[in-house]
Amino acid sequence: MTNKDLADLIFPNITLTIEDLEKKYPKRDLKEGAMVTRFAPSPTGFLHTGSLFTSLVSYRFAKQSGGVFYIRLEDTDTKREIEGSGAELVKQLNVFGVTPDEGYISDTEEKGSYGPYKQSNRALIYNTVIKHLIEIGRAYPCFATPEELVKLREEQTARKEIPGYYGKYAIYRDYPIDEAYARIKNGDSYIIRFKSMGDHNNKVSFHDEIRGDLELTENDQDIVILKGDGLPTYHFAHLCDDHFMHTTVVTRGEEWLPSLPIHLELFDTLGFERPRYAHFPVIMKVDNGVRRKLSKRKDNEAAVEFFLKSGYPKYGFIEYLLTIANSNYEQWRDENKDKSYNDFMLSFDKMSLDGALFDLEKVESISKDRMAYRKASVLADEVLEWANQYEPEFAAKISANKEFFTSILNIEREKENPRKDYAKYSDIYPIISFMYNDVYDSLDKTNPDLSVKVGKKDQKNVPANVVVEFLNKYLESYNVDVTEEEWFENMKKIAEGMKFTSDRKEYKDNPDSYYGQVGDAAGFIRIALAGRKNTPNIYFVQKILGKDEVARRINETIAILSK
Ligand code: GLU
Image 1 (cartoon, rainbow, N blue to C red):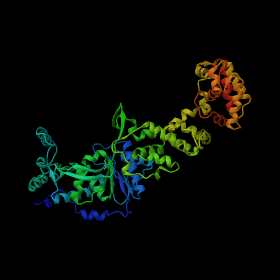
Image 2 (cartoon, helix red, strand yellow; image 1 turned 120 degrees about the vertical axis):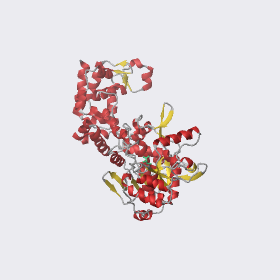
Image 3 (cartoon, rainbow, N blue to C red; image 1 turned 180 degrees about the horizontal axis):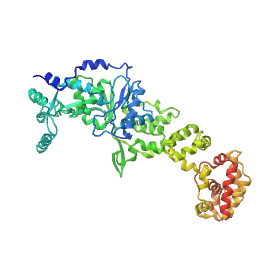
């Protein structure tokens, strides 16, 4: 009885050889230096911020080198699988412009000629390779029961030896072929293990694209390559897939670094060329002064959906991720304000080695900055798209009069130093809702807050009749068909005629001679029009509301104050 007999018994239907597979999946015809990268998610839930980071960066490396980026669904862990999450991940990546050239799209759809791109559909390939490994004596069936394995581990712990299934502890590696054959025929359950030739006293050298030259302990574990359910393990599957799909650089999280020696031994054993590897930093966060991994369970910001729902603009978020990807991104951005982030050339050597730190404040400030430079009409479309999904009431307001909404967004925008008021789409409505008459009308005007705010500034009570007089005078000479400066000058004159000063020092020296400063008087207009102290530039607000609406709101305030 030979290894070949055993292999035929285990895989009676496999007639393909590795050479056949090599022919079926020929080397890709790409220009020198073009990278083939991939994103290989497991369908176990929502898109994690770390996964978006990894996939975005992998995608950019492929694109900037004229290569190929593909998606492969790693669904061999059926226990952890959440139905439908694979297709959902692909959709969310699309939102961020991470669109694969080929690969898995959904459980019924894929594109590209290196598929199938879903591991559970690749049994033929895995089995062909495993059959070959059995034939050459580098893989074998293992009949160990869970109890046997537990016993093994206890023995190793007691002897203070390295735990695992290796060397003399690999109880079935030298099991007689005849016996294995008989047991399989008999229907005994088994799994397939790789037979390692490594020694943990040896080192294996490797060059990681990000971490440089590494010396790692050689693998000596006879790892499982085919599980009892007939599906391969990650270690083995990724090797077959990255080989036959011709990945040039395997980009993945640094949590895979410890198992790299296993992968290297597998590649070498099969005579497959080792791909390059880049192990990305894990995204960390500071929690109570302690650095820890961003956690699916504890942190909102671990889920990409959180950013989408809050309405962070995707271009802001992408740029944030690029700042954590490459230390020189921000400087490049400063020097290339007009360019798209797609023009930035990512490099492995500018990637941080120890966990990248997630910083929500920075996401905010980058988003604020990028949103400020959007054209109003473009931003209006973005906001509407977002509101349609997450805030229908706001969406209805926008749709009812898009032009009106756009003009509000355009306040102090499309100029050299635009205002940076909004970090996310959800910031907008609370700031501008007063512009809508129904919202303004529904403000509680009897609320003492309104009159208190109108009459009070810096703890100093401006008598209501003074505010009324000011607002009346302002309305009498109301004119915003002039420049902002002229409008301000006119308003200032009225205020100065009523014991409001524009001289800060004078006010400081003689506070009792004045009700306040000119800015305080302008504040009355603001509160009358918006019911709040913070609004976009009030000159433009008035232009947009129109003279009649301004008069209506100011008169209403006057009436309240006159009661
Ligand atoms: N399925 C693996 C994971 O989700 C992929 C690792 C890799 O990219 O090779 O972590």
